[in-house]
Length: 212
Ligand SMILES: Nc1ncnc2c1ncn2[C@@H]1O[C@H](COP(=O)(O)OP(=O)(O)O)[C@@H](O)[C@H]1O
Ligand SMILES: O=c1ccn([C@@H]2O[C@H](COP(=O)(O)O)[C@@H](O)[C@H]2O)c(=O)[nH]1
Image (tube, rainbow, N blue to C red; front, side, top):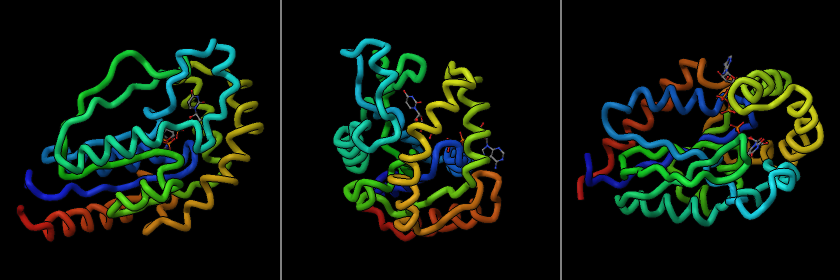
């Protein structure tokens, strides 16, 4: 298996749509073998040079918030079966952390994030493109719960950010990328049939890739 060309799966969808849950479901199937997860969020631009108050002004739902060149170059390195130092993002401080995570090349690369289908160069690297399609009311409820519990936010800050930035950016940049998806998954990781179909397709592609 080690010499086969790795397979890249892109998992896009709005914030709170269930991308992480879909990723976890696929990861669980392949974790005994060879799978790695690359979170687009970890590639937010480093903002260490900005004051904390200035970082709060950043539009984190715009394509330009991400260091997409770094993301693309690291996926290309993994496709060449070499290891990379994945950046780590701190949501509470709104900037890149000092640490990195060493990622070894694997047969299956899962690339997950709100805008992974937005850049044509990223789409070209993908073998399977997924879009997790969840209604806006469910997405905001899930985001409120998660951001308060895991990302150090207040309900007021989540609602303000949602109305002023997240919602308009979703409609402008994220929703249109649904058109690039091979498969649209309603409501994320609890959709067992969709996950089974995707897992079967991944296995078929891996089996069809001849040893070098
Ligand atoms: N189908 C679902 N039903 C109920 N809760 C869900 C479902 N999918 C995800 N969640 C929950 O919603 C929150 C956001 O999901 P997550 O997968 O982190 O979304 P995303 O990665 O797209 O932002 C998490 O707390 C997760 O446990
Ligand atoms: O410093 C930051 C960085 C990102 N965000 C928000 O995160 C979501 C994307 O993450 P999901 O896991 O897909 O929800 C994005 O909508 C940004 O608004 C942030 O608030 N602060």
